[in-house]
Image: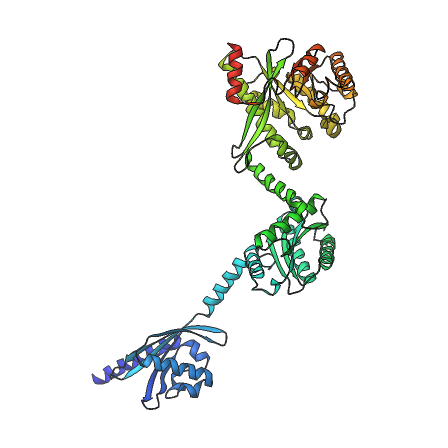
Length: 563
């Protein structure tokens, strides 16, 4: 029976020993040999990590740290063991040959009541490597291997705070590939990513290793150049542009690119990271405005450009945020003084700048193509409102809406008008579309055909701001206009200048002979109105009669006349 117990105990001990040996982490025991000399010796050392280092129970039993480890490390362990022996719980990290361990030491007693230290070391190496990898992924771009926006922002902040070697004056360079979206659409995602990786590699080669280089967004890179003069920065920008314009050969095609580079200088152009970055971006956009494939340094003249880019971004969201609204300027028949129509004029209720008039954003909208969406909104809103007024009372007034010449580059222009008329229910005869003379130069033949189609629908066509553009008079005969709107500049001196009077009378007479209805814009004085009445102008609009008014006021005006 006793033999069986001994055998069972031995088997249990063997299983326990086998388990310890298979442990990935380290378990060890330390005993104090002599109180006087404070000598610590190991009584157990198990675990696969320990075994890999040659540290097994058999190899270390009875040996001191000084006998097993380098003097400095042994001294460190001695201090930890002495603290633990005094009953202080010891928890610390230990780095050994690029491996990281979480170590805990506690004072305990064995089965005989003898005090001993029990230590446990958990291998954190893989965990720390994973953590470092995650941190790297947070701050580095997976495609190019370059620092990303987050890492760049931190480095730029350190630079201006004096925590970086580039804290002396430096040049911040923004590099943006021209028309990358178009290229991406043409060749696809995978080739586009290969191109970006290629560009990143080339930039890394042309910029020395001290240069802070990052990929901020899809095709947007940034670099901080230290200890460099403006002339050297110009040369470097030229080199980068030349590098990017070099053809890139893919499996399917040869890709040609250009780039725009914008630069700002710290601390001349600002003392804060956001300011320096914004000004470099402004300079880059200026380079793009010049046609791309060039560089530009920031200057105070670019403040307006920067504001325009901000405004463009805000304007893009104006329709969707319901920030646009309409005012209406009444049109009156000269002979009877009767209200016969109105012109719909868009306004923008900017969240910060308040009400903005067309002169501050329409040109920008045309440059960016946003005018197409804005005009579409104006046309639908105006048609819907007039139809509501007609249904609410005996209202026969028509509405005029301005359309940009850009619509006549769109094949669905006529269809757009048809769809809006059908949707709102407004009769085509109640709509007049105003076009400027730009349409003659930009898309004359296409515009002519579209205007004919609009006329077939019953929509009336007016030429707006006549005399301010570059149209030849034969366009009045060629194009199917119904109305000629005389620009306000013809009226300014008409009562005091014989020459201006002759021009105005000639325009009115010519329009009459072409069976065009004549509308004079910008009428501000009684003298001007009398002159126009005397010379048979059909309709007028202007501050003398009424400023552009909100919908509510226009509604009251219409119903007061109706009643």
